[in-house]
Image (cartoon, rainbow, N blue to C red; front, side, top):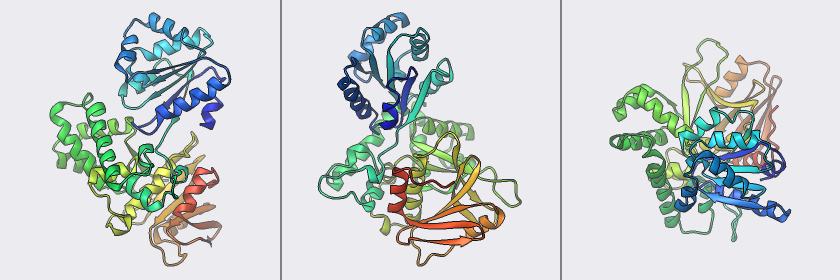
Length: 394
């Protein structure tokens, strides 16, 4: 919200992107109230309402006139439904019309077509993710890490609800994504294959994946699987990260890992809402928690990768900032502050590393390996550092 407040008096069009139900509409409504309190006139268009969308089923000039007459600040929810949206926004911006536009988008590849065309230099993008653990305020008690690992951070799930109700909501969110977003993007006969792919990605989250292997399992071509992976990424539901390598011998150079955007959604796909401590994939759950947090701090000069060798040495994440690597290892259980084998191998190969992290359940400490300080922090501490912007690795 603070970032968006700073944009209120800027001429660029601000676009909030994110998966369905992560709170984009709520955020726009809150911003609308703040702006109205300053005395500016506003109007909110929710294009998921049929009657509102019908008003935008006109020629571009009529839509421009409509926006012009709506107020000093205009909010457009799910703007991807507007035909020629980029040209309309470009015309308003280039004519220096004194109107500020905030809009949101979630699920259409058309958004990316808009963004790649005539809005270059005229818009700023903001990504909205599910709530972080430290952002969740429960009216009765603190929202625990255990609950977060079970049900994730979708805003509608953080209320005081029964476990059964939360599971139902997550299942419905998953079905809504398939019905609303995916059905229009892939052939009807391939919906089952797409569902199978979603399950395989959830099951193999955090592991290096092979497109050829996925292709064989769902019985579609590698080209189709790559397209589905693109769709999942462009609808903000699944994300790929790639291996880090400086072309040193024995490093994997072209592999990737994938992570779904929310832990609750992953559990809904797997149909497993049991506690992380009772599950065989406990390590993957904690690793996913760390990835989803890291993703929220990524700036244009940053990137998330992982490191792995053909011999099996690995580091879960390499956070790059200005191309300088910060290794991050995730350990659900750790008896004492000991440098994990994969992290030690990485530090032996890359001599100029200044900071590294081992994120775990219980241990807070630090060790030194040559010139590198290795900080051991708990998952809760990591979450707070991310949320308060004090996780500064360089």
